[in-house]
Length: 81
Image (cartoon, rainbow, N blue to C red; front, side, top):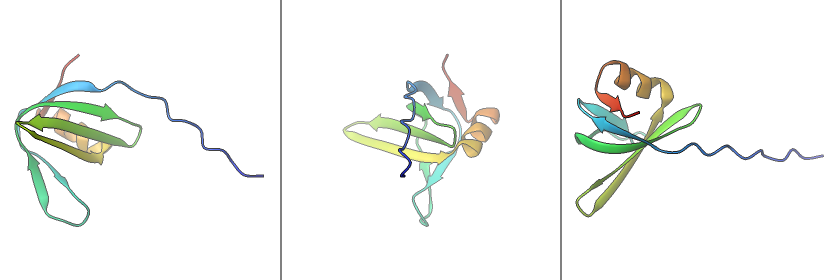
């Protein structure tokens, strides 16, 4: 008997503002800094995905939830209620 994957409940994206230095890493590459400004945040139990628009360019970054929470606690990311 094979196990069937259960769907992950969808959580709406939350608006946030990057205020201080926030960086992420793509694979084994260097740290990339996210520019200050508005972002959307999608949270799961293990990750936070930030997405933004900068002119005609769209960007996104995923990071472990523990690192995201540290950025919020340090004031580098402000979450909007």
